[in-house]
Image (cartoon, rainbow, N blue to C red; front, side):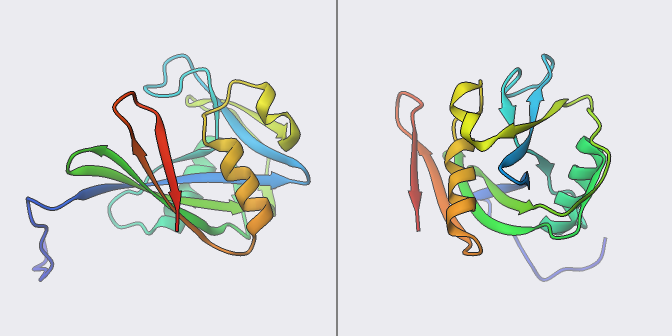
Length: 164
């Protein structure tokens, strides 16, 4: 491994980088209904995405995930927000939220789940991951502004969201 002057201090807050992709087609958003074998959010509708791997940046990771999970390319895929998510005392997730609408390819289901174009007006009627309706609205209302958020959780596991 190459010599690198960067260091990670053991007592500092550390994050795992992930992407969340919300692709739009008119008034519809592409969501994935998680397979029954998914580790988290099984059976729920969610955006696509996944981990940023070593050697990738957030955008290249999102492009890879979109191809792997949906068989799509998106020529205008771009960052629309970031969310810092507290998971443990010293560990969290840095979620890079990406969006776009100019897709190429044929939507294909994957092992992760089945894909569905869902009307943004119907998000409250389906079993959806709790923050998706809020994020979809923020993307559609605030574009092209980039948002920044933090998800913390109270002692009952209720999400507390702050936007900055």
